[in-house]
Amino acid sequence: IKDVIAYLRLIANSDDDPAFIRAVTTPKRGIGTATLEKLGQVAATLHVSLFEAVFSAAAASLIGERHLAPLLEFCHFINRTEERVVREPAGEVLNDLLKFIDYEVYIFDQDDTRVAQGKWNNVLEFAAWIAKKGEEDDKNLLQLTQTIALITLLEGREEEAPDAVRLSTLHAAKGLEFGHVFLVGIEENILPHRDAVDEGRLEEERRLMYVGVTRAKKSLTLTYCSRRKRARESVACDPSRFIDELGDDVRMPEKPTTAEAKASGSDRLAALKAMLG
Image (spheres, rainbow, N blue to C red):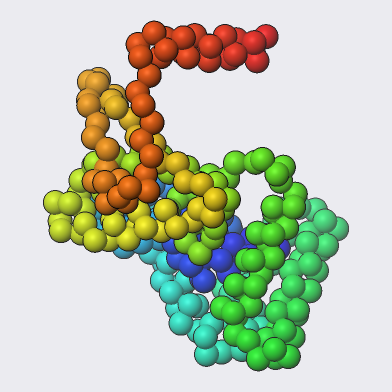
């Protein structure tokens, strides 16, 4: 039922990029890897989620109308379903979703009949549970999805090692909290993105920075590069202006001496060689 949960997560939060990727490719709807890579480029450039990037002029230009059409159809379906979830019975909305995406056909196309029947029975059982909980608790599908997302997150944490690292975009991290958070690439032209500054959307970027900072419960580490390689040139980078706005709460580390930097690099190389045998 992970595919179905991905749809529900996306309906509840269209900024959930992992859920978007899973849902948009299940079942297959003529959206290839190359198209998704281009969409990812657009999203990164505009500093928006994959879902939001679909509706941008940049996506239409880079991807082209023919390849963008199934993406638009998918996103319009998600938007229509999102409008229904708060006013219609949970079970009815979910069953309509399963029919619309032909999920039963998809399952039986993937596996032999016996295995597929078992998977489909699990989906039917899940849908029946959603319908029952919706009626008993007087909750709509959006409210039930939020509960399911929390349960899924907690189960995932139990299965993972306690010192595991979880990678996430800022958009997908909304509403979540972590003990220790590392925000990477906190530089001018990245956060805030240069296009956002040029187009007067600085406040949107500031809110995105706020989302990242407030995900941390115990510690927050911000990182930036002193130089980056763009094209074939090494370009100097400036720390994000948002770091200065954090005030005295930020502790800036001292820069290592040249000798210390070389020694540290040698130690890392030796450790890597040891790992590789």
